Length: 320
Length: 320
Image (cartoon, rainbow over all chains, first blue to last red; front, side, top):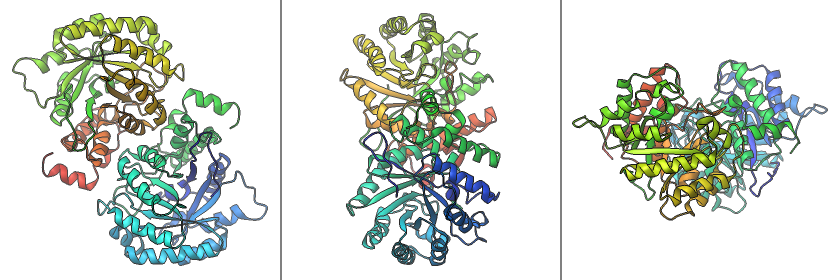
């Protein structure tokens, strides 16, 4: 993954998952042109990776039916490309990988849920079988020359099962590491995570292998999303997955709010002196456009309030 | 202040400021009976201190006009008193202290803004003069036998001035310490704080005197409120000020959202194993009642989603 570095010592990589995780629960299908504009705006603003869509069956999630077309248009020779974001796509199975390889996905994202119930509802398979299948599919993506990120979903708790044993999370992570898959995201699908748990689990994850490149994915169901992001960053996490405006949720868990809002994450990182290269004003404009499209208020804060005054001035003024 | 301890090593004291900071910007005046019910519910749920109101001039903030009456009724001999919360009141000047001493306030809260502009708009005085006056008033409250908490408002940034020099914050804190006032709250009135700033400033505050009992007060204007609460707790802060439902804002700054939501704070603390003695279900009911009274959605999360399943079960089941 493109590893931009902030002005300060800490490295934070930003992965926008709004076009996939944000949109997948929305009933109103977003026209492809609008999705392309959102991906381009995110990339042009300096976001490092953008998840364009999911290779789920179109009948299951009609919102994702144009994923292949979006990638083809974004990666066509001569296609105008704003920014340098890596274009990522969520792959659920072998068939999805076939589609992903055929249409130009740059980073293949795959995951297994650590919750038996969530895994069965989501994939029809238990955790052990799902892990085996996903590892095999991920290996095939690597062999096809693609970057790969593997994730553990429901890593901090499950809307169906409640607490999820950390050993279950680490067992999946070990299977990834043994297969040479070191870009690993822990996803708080239901929003159950709390800071000390986050610190402990990233500590244990990083102890598995020195080459692990960890990512985090927090839903803000219970208001602890941003506290968890900072707990993850403090614990050695590098990549933060977030969604424009805080849009989203998971259709397969009982209660889930959207991800932490991208522009809120960037705002507080910039207050910290990090990622001043990212165009916050553009991200605010993007979140407002998404909010306007769905004609409702989104959970993110900064796209409603605007940035704190100094940041507004610096955004208007000189570049990064 | 009543110092309840959580199940784990870390001590966290909860100070509900909704009846004051939450209500003061609301145009619809809440009947005294309803305010009394909210204070009682908060106290009965196990909150350690409740800020009942502000001794501001009734014409300036009509919502606070019944503050003296509320205290009289809450502290009258034979008055039924649910819970053990310390009843606190915000005092702005000498006249306010006279009122507070006359009506039974148990802890007097006073503050100075570290922002010259905010101070002048709020009090008509510059920071130096306001500090001198507030220290003298606080000393008089101590001599009258009351507990006292002093605060620095706009400690992390100002809606008018932008960045606030930490030296200005520490100069006010030093004046407090020299006057023997060691219960010190740093208030992020405008919501500008970010975690590394919070850690640095609490570190510097605590270095002033070994006896300091620090409190924090974060508005969630830009979505970093809960991350800042955890940064403060990690840095030695003991008391967290919060508002039911996340209600509130400051009428004297340009942009300000409500405080972090009390029930969201308690929820994540309980996930951390702390403050399991507090009745989260009761706090959720309280926030829902406040939301119903104002007939609008409040920014807090947990009163809308309910707690994560395990917590719901433990709240229904055995006591702390």
